[in-house]
Length: 211
Image 1 (cartoon, rainbow, N blue to C red):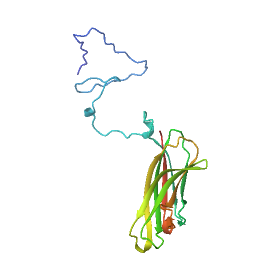
Image 2: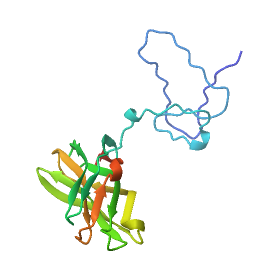
Image 3: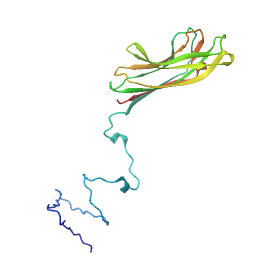
Image 4: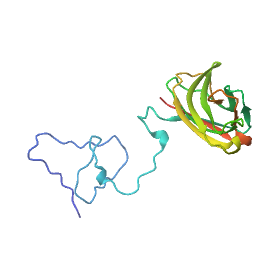
């Protein structure tokens, strides 16, 4: 029969006390068959001592993460062609609404805007603005814009061009916000600009990120 021996430390002066818990149940503690130290809640464990498959982590149980969580996602699509040749800004029809849960939240915006247009016959190039506009309480603000330019256009037409727009907004608001896209011929000329050319699909995705 193997034995258990408790051996004191010749250099120490303290007394090690092993206390029994308040229990009415007989229990057996089995010591490992190997040399080593017993770990406590104050001990550290080297990652090199970990082996085998670790259990899956449930994201809802994570603590200490105060920013960067995705709180909600909103998406929308629009597939109706909208045309304009007045040289002024016009709504493409692509729009989505989101209501932030906190004034510290950020809104990540991802847009795929389909477009087309015509040079008007006298030129073989066209350039136009595509903008992301935020509307809050009836007031619109451009938060991102990009210019598309096409040269040497065959038969004066461009068709089915998809533009990607990505930005992050810090609205500092818990009001319902509308994010939409607008387009405008860059030189305010009478060139035809089209959103959702030939009824192709444009899309927008809004993500609220905890700030």
